[in-house]
Amino acid sequence: MTPFFGKIISNESAGMGLRTLVIEAAPAFEEGVCPGQFGHIKVPNAPQHLLRRPISIMDADSANKTLTFCIQPKGNGTELICAMKPGDEVELIAPLGHGFSLDEAKNVWLIGGGIGAAPMVYTAKQFSKTADVVAITGSRSAEGVIARDVFESVCKHFVVCTDDGSCGIHGTVVAGAASIGGKPDLICACGPTPMLRAVQAFALEHDIPCQLSLEQHMGCGYGACLTCSCKTRDKDGHEDYSRVCADGPVFDAREVVL
Amino acid sequence: MMKPDLSVNLCGVTLKNPIIPASGTFGYGRDFVKFYDISTLGAVSAKGVTPLPRCGNPPIRIAETPSGILNSVGLQNPGIDEYIKTELPWMIEQGAVVITNISGNTVEEYAMMAEKLDKTDTAMIEVNVSCPNVHCGGKVFGADPKVINEVAVAVKKATSKPVIIKLSPNVTDIVEMALAAEAGGADSVSLINTLTGMAIDINTRRPILANLTGGMSGPAVRPVALRMCYQVAQAVNIPVVGMGGIMTGEDAVMFLLAGCTAVQVGTANLSDPMACPKIIEGLEQYMVRNGIGKVSELIGAIITD
Ligand SMILES: Cc1cc2nc3c(=O)[nH]c(=O)nc-3n(C[C@H](O)[C@H](O)[C@H](O)COP(=O)(O)OP(=O)(O)OC[C@H]3O[C@@H](n4cnc5c(N)ncnc54)[C@H](O)[C@@H]3O)c2cc1C
Ligand SMILES: Cc1cc2nc3c(=O)[nH]c(=O)nc-3n(C[C@H](O)[C@H](O)[C@H](O)COP(=O)(O)O)c2cc1C
Ligand code: FES
Image 1 (tube, each protein chain N blue to C red):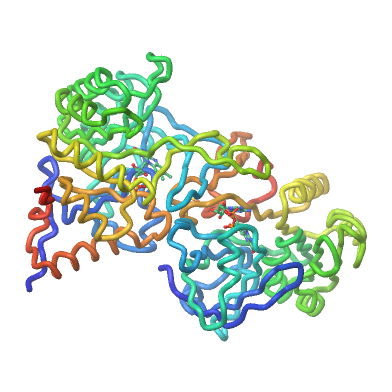
Image 2 (image 1 turned 90 degrees about the vertical axis):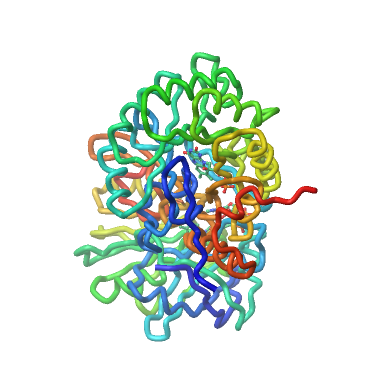
């Protein structure tokens, strides 16, 4: 594996200030790309930004060897990445981390809050090949619903939840999940910590296998520096720190202490 | 021109080249073998170990500052025994020359770890004195020349391995600290460790690091590090291992010219996993461009008149 330069193929608005970038990334496909993995993207032309920015892989096209990222500009780093134009080159390391695994599940709920819906796009595409997938996404308003067309075409159900009620269910993704009824044999979730906490509680209470994708400020992104820690608990109840970049970003809900 | 000779002799150990990943930015090498062959490095300075396992500080542990970073990992490590049992032999199996970096809270702890390492295949021991001394109200070892001297004497007594004392830059006069290490019998000094710093999120009014403060590193500290290395190299008669913000082969050349026998590369590994191989290549290209046959010709070759 090695960092590589990828050409920007397109950079389009995805509503609410979000940008969707499609990047040429042939080297990323040498070992295969799993849902829930991320790319560690160098801030272009900005040597003062020593650290790369971790961004979830939203989609991976193995035929055209491209990766898609959906980015919410937050600070200077993501702003500079989002300002790149088609034809520009960006340096990235991808794919990194442990993603979601379907195991033998046949009936899966994918829950994405805000920008956390992005990794669910590729996850839905992959998992729907062998399982029934229900996607539940939450956003502030109708404009922030991402990848509606993909979710609608590959999922058995697509439940939209908005904070302002401008579209779908007026409320959180947990309310959205409750509205479906029934019980999946796997839940995968990505989003803000309070949402993950609620999903974790719901899954543990109903004894549903559950995988959560976490965020943490990162250094290297590939396991060496121990800066991206999150608290985890092993089977004996012993607490320790794990590395979000290499042990995660996806963890079993039973082992994460949120 | 012939391929230049990059090898150096550090404390009696021959290194293929003077480039060493710095402690804490390389783990125990396991995460690098997917990127390159770690036996191509001059040596590796392993993540700091302590007498007992440590889980480290709560997150957030890293912040980016202009051309620098702050970290507060808090010496997360599996403890000296586990290190000797699994991590050290693994690195040696990969063909790496290993410098074991140790951190303690008492002089006795340093000596105990050095004794345990004496029977291992570690090539050298690097003593991180940027740790709080529990017998001195938590004041770091590296801030008091008397204590540095004591640590050097105790560690040298406990082992026949070459001992490098790694100095803290958070002092008024680092030369005094280097001289104290040399007087205590240290075979070498390495510098600089991180400079204590801080960052605040003005929107939440909270410090970014959960630990409030952290260690600053990266190119932002390089001029300070270079000055300290130069002054120390002028003052001591033992080899100096320089570090602080080295990102390129050219940066490494600067530290060699200032009098360093070898250099360590820390933060650059976080920006780019290929940093060390690229720096080795950059150093070699500089030598070719300037017709320098042996890297040792560069050591201390600064012109000051
Ligand atoms: C595994 C993972 C996947 C992610 N996926 C996406 C995604 O698909 N789309 C998206 O828009 N964002 C995603 N993020 C969040 C994104 O990494 C941050 O918003 C981004 O790093 C902020 O950088 P900045 O320079 O714009 O902001 P600044 O606040 O200026 O960044 C300063 C420093 O803090 C770090 N930082 C700040 N916020 C975060 C955060 N939430 N997570 C990690 N590091 C942070 C930055 O990396 C940088 O080192 C993901 C984060 C992780 C850990
Ligand atoms: C994430 C991180 C962890 C570190 N851990 C250690 C450590 O365990 N022991 C030690 O002696 N120095 C440690 N350091 C300091 C580095 O080895 C080095 O002295 C410092 O970062 C300056 O070099 P640089 O600017 O090239 O990073 C650490 C630095 C970083 C960035
Ligand atoms: S970011 Fe370096 S270990 Fe995770």
